[in-house]
Image (cartoon, rainbow, N blue to C red; front, side, top):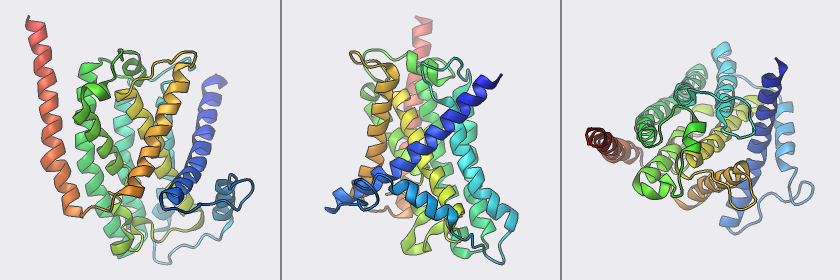
Length: 314
């Protein structure tokens, strides 16, 4: 009875540690992209920097706006982090005894709930900047979720099964990411937009909204919001690997080791994109999904369904 609970707790702790050191990787990576060192003063080469940041944020005074809706204001960051950690239950590891048989449906339900944590944070802060940032984030997230769902349906038609473990085990010698390059690129760009990362970080557009939906958060609330964001980046990188880039073993390396290396590479590409590309205009962002990604995803889905009907009839 305690086995699944202990496994779940270990998964959450490992995910949070991964989030902590991913922030260090991002700061180091952005530093070298910009020809500087990044954090290197705390401890050995700056390695304890994430622990130092966490200790600082969670021991600071929790300042809250006087006119904010107190309950929703405090619930929103916790809700965002809980939803992000719930997705780690879908980790398709070969060492786990049990897996979600309907994991992809669970992923769709939980990822669509992320909108409500942003909405709560923006609305409960009782700030015009926070509310505008939340509204922009909601419009962006819902728009790109349409493309994500259609591409996910495309993958499910190619690799039958409703769990990530089924999709992982159905990959052949050639990865889907190479067979369907445009679809995999649309998936990755949609993941970047879904997680509100640069160049699509309009929810936190500091040039227009000071800091967006999280402007009134400090200390622990601020830390929880960004822990949720980075946990989402890592889990979307993991699902990108499972769906499009296989998880096969290489030589003596296990399936999980190869999958971890690929996940780290995809997560690093998130940082690479942030360091390279300037922020989009908001109307171009929304036009990109509705005028380009949606027709492409619909066309690909219609083609694969048509091909399946032809195969069945023949």
